[in-house]
Structures are given as structure tokens and as C-alpha cells.
Amino acid sequence: MADPTDPARDDGPRHSAPRAPGTLRIGSIAGIDVLITTSWFVVAALISLTFGPRIEAAQPGLGFWRYVAGFAFAVVLYLSVLLHEASHAVVAKRLGYGVNSITLHFLGGMTEVDGQSKRPRHEFWIAVVGPLTSIAVGVVAGLLVRVTPDGLLDEALFLLAGANLLIGVLNLVPGLPLDGGRVLKALVWGASGNQHRATIVAGWGGRLTALALLAWPLVQEQVTDEPPTILDLVLVFILGLFLWTGATAAMAHARLRQRLPALVARPLARRTLTVPEDLPLAEAVRRAQEAQAGSIVTVTPDGTPVGIVSEAAVTAMPAERRPWVAVSAVARTMEEGLTLPAGVAGEDLILAISRRPAEEYLLVEADGQIYGVLSTADVDRAFRDNARR
Image (cartoon, rainbow, N blue to C red):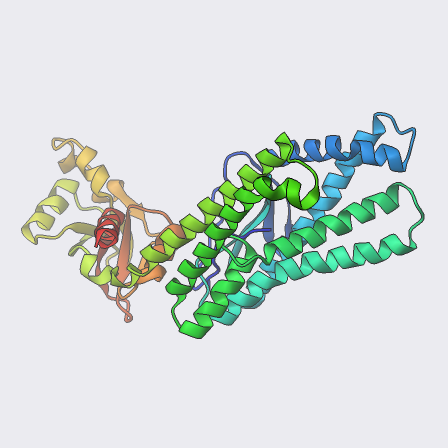
């Protein structure tokens, strides 16, 4: 359903993100992990209990099995939600973006796509395909109702049609974090040329939607002749809170992204001293201090970098042991993702760090020459300073 992430082109190697606590992997679609949260079992039980009486009315005599049928309906319903999310993921991949996972949870589903869109039309198509898929499922289920004999299957198709049409229409409401909010963002972005301004507009759409939803119980009886129940109030509060917090987070991220272009790796790099792997640590530290270098990189005899010396490991090493320890003992081996172009900046820098978390990264020029070492602590400090301005 709602997708609180914005997609971005995956320009480098990706590594599987750690699975969030409370999630289970149930399979994959087009190489994308499909996860389910433990909260899903709660909503599946609620669906089973809620629709049990309707199932009994459609197929009398089921007894306890009506709740089993209700649980089966919950599974089918979430398979349609999975189809909604898979459509987001497939279109994103077709447009060249990296997709990390699809997660089914209490409020529906979420597709985790790397970063943010590069073009308004990409934002539009990735967002709109989800609601259109749900509406299509609802229409097909509705047509099948017309040719299905009365009974349990007919009732299940009727409920499935109604649920998917509701999901599709509600997700087209123009406010973040709903898909309709991303559609609005794409339209404003295309018209204004300013992605961040478009996110703010769509975020306000989400906030107004949340306020309208929270106000619904005040007018529900006048509109439907039915007073709101405790369950209605709880659902309205949960959904309103979800919309408000999602919209607010999107607006805050947009304001931060406006400052990202000022975050450049090159001026943040520390001067680097290259040393042989077998050099005693004490001698390596002495040479670095003499050269006023803020970092040390170990290299092979032909100058190929093989490790970045960890500042934390050097500090933890007692001074009396340093003459007897090779500098390679406190160096992190150069792995994939630890070497970045010296000119990396803005969101590309943040994405590179998030893909391969580490304390230090080696910055190299286009010709392969070592420029310096970038410390994550320095990036964090610069990011906070930019956010305060």
C-alpha cells in the first residue's frame, strides 16, 4: 500500500541490508526478498474473527472452520497486497533502480527502494502502478462474483473485490506517504522543476488527509446513520497517526536533502600516509605525526592499497606494544565498497556510506591515485553542521 521510500538509481554494488527485528523472509520475487512482520499475524487473526460470522452466514454449519476460512481469506487478501507492492518493485527495477525488499505488515505493505527518483516521470510511474494494480484486482474479482454461485467462494470474491478497490482508491489520495502523495509530488516536481518543494507540497497533502481522517468520527453518524464504534475510533487514530508521521518525516527528509549538495567528500578527506604492511605500528604512527597525516593506509610493494588503519584500533593499542605489532594488525582489509571516488558528494555520498557501513573509506582519483581517507565521523559532523544552517 503506502510506500514511504523514494526510489533512486543504484549506481554501485549493493549489499543485503540487515533484516529488521520481528520480520521473517517468506520468499522472493524477481530476486527481491519478501518479508513479513510478526504484526501481520495479529491482523490476520483480527480479519479471521471479524469475517468469521459473514463466512458462517454464507456457508452455514462450518463451526470453528469459519475462522480457518477467515484466516485463509486474510492470506489471499495479503497476496493481493503483495501484488500491489510487487508492481512497485518491478517497475522500479525496469527503470533501473535498486530494490532491497518488500515487507508485508499490519497496515499493508512497503517496498524499500534505494534513495530517491531522478526524474518526475519515474516517480509517477513507480507510484501509480500500485493503486492501479489493486483496482485491477478488485475489478477482476468483482467480475468473477457475477459468474460464481452463491456460497463461500462468492462471498470471498466479493470481499476481495471491495478490499482491493478500497485499497486502490485510498492510495490515490494526494498526500504522502500514500502512493497518491508520490503521484502529486511527481506532478508538482514536473511543473516546478523542484523536487524538494514538491515533497513539501505532497507532505502537506498527507497532513491534511490525516486531519480529515481524524475528524471523520465527528460526522460519521450524520453521513452513514451509524455511530462510530470503539474499533472505528482505534482504526482512525492508527491510520491518522500513520499518515501524519509519514508526511512529517517526508517533509523533514526533503529539507535535509536540500542541504545535501553542500556535503562533499574531497574537502572532508584526511591527509593520508602510505606505509608497508609489515611496518611496526609505532613507526607508522611516528611517520604520520611527522607528516601531519590524519590517516594511514597500508600498501603492497607496488603501491596497491590493501588496508585502512583504524583510528580506534590504534588508540586502543597500548603504547608499549606498538613497536612489536605490525601496522597491518590494526588495518581493515580493503573490501568492496570501501573505495570511493574523491569527487563523490551529496546523496551519492550518503548512499555509498549506507550501502557499506564502515569507519573509514579510501578516496581515489579517476586515475587510481590515492587522495585521502574519509572518516564517517567527519561526514556525520559535516551533515549535522549543514542541517543547523
